[in-house]
Image (cartoon, rainbow, N blue to C red; front, side, top):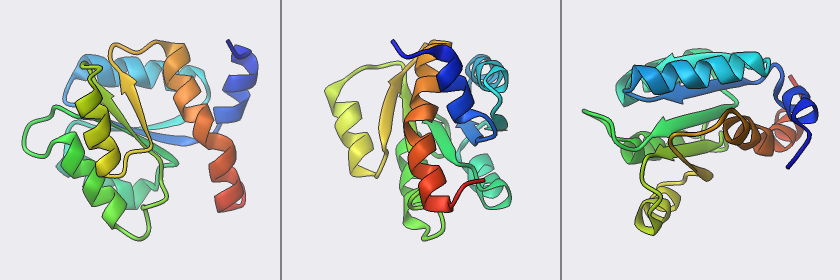
Length: 141
């Protein structure tokens, strides 16, 4: 297990978007991320998220697979098709830990997979796994 203080400093200041139709999941993620010093952008579905991504330019995006209207796979595919955001890490969120879901997530370009319910540690760890890479790509924040 990594040192939580080191992990928190790694993610501090990063913009993280959480796309989930569950208010409970959005609120939990928001609380965990704010405690770690992240800026948080919330969206309740894929359409809402796509409208906010261009304005906020998040560093990491978490997207729920099972959502009405525009599911997580399609949302991820649309994000990754946009040249401005194709290098933005997308982490799929699912209550199922199935191999098929993981494979399908990879096919649409997701960078990681996190099973719900997630812990604060697993959420922050997922963000931290991209923080150094992103700061190198974007030349810091």
